Image (cartoon, rainbow, N blue to C red):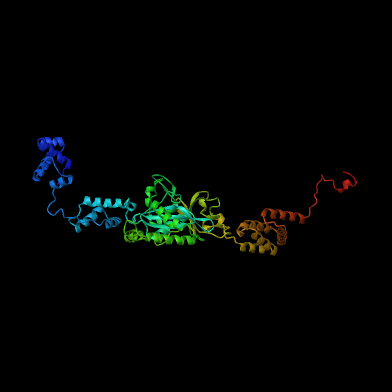
Length: 504
């Protein structure tokens, strides 16, 4: 039965016993209902209580509302709040379900409202870990730490931090820089460390994660999005200047700086590998250390509640790929890292998307792949060309080789063969001299073999390795070897005119 406030109870008794007011008048004066006034007066009469009341508020309440038989000794079975909290981290588990299970085991237990209030009070007492309820395997928050550590000769290592909110389990790893390749590798290593993949990634608005920051519709970095699709996760970046969107990453950064980075500050690391190994050792200690206010540790809670909730890793590890917007030249080649790769000649002059991995080069036009090559690392091999990308008139020269030109030159003689071989040696790669060799050998098709041999000998002696100067040399030698014929004309006077002979 609902209790009436003690002060109002005293006022009701005062108005009734001292002033003699009717119940309706008392109800109007105190603001209580007529039923409340009647019930209070009946209980006071039954307990033999009259005004003035010489009791404390607690004594008056106990006299008017005595406990039922045995109720004073009855105690409700209290729920196991720590177990309830662990169960709440499991996917699909709700407080309603846990209360129903509790009531099945303890029929005399708390009602649903009291059960929920107990759990809310428990969370407030442990708000360091429980400000917001997260489901196991739901999300992974990531960020870079603000502190660095030196290694080697004046180099600094940067620390990646990832946190699983449901279990508070952390992953920390040092990197030589904070570039895109390190960012992607850090995520892949974190997935491997946890042995599974969450549903959602919550990164900061760094350039390696978000290409264009926006409060409502951020533009995800292309390589980062490709990595997320490979692992089947959704990327929901924290809003700009909203650190509360990723509180566990922020807290994880503080823990990593205080418990790992600061702990290693006085150690000298000669190599990056030494620093990385020391960091992972401290990370293992951190995750195994018992909580102060909760049972277990980060690692034990992760193994108990979250590991099985993560989705399995894909069959293959993600291969880092760099995207670049390129323009195909009029020679239908695109450039990446100082080397050139062909695309179908129809795309010459167009803007294309290039995807580069450690082993391959792919070119896309409007999300459709139009070319694929093995990535070249050979210094001399600057051009990689697929013959199927060439127009018909270019394919005619696609089978040119140094051996073909030497065979062609051998038909004129050893001096010509020697000169053509020397020409190809003067270039960075033989292919750069092919057009020059073809032009020179075509000049010789109308010459006697001996004449071509002579010109080639002279050209090599004079260090001539261009078609233009070879042609000039050829013309000069031809003019010297051909005597000038006398010109016969009526207007020419001849030698007899100047010798004193008869004039016409």
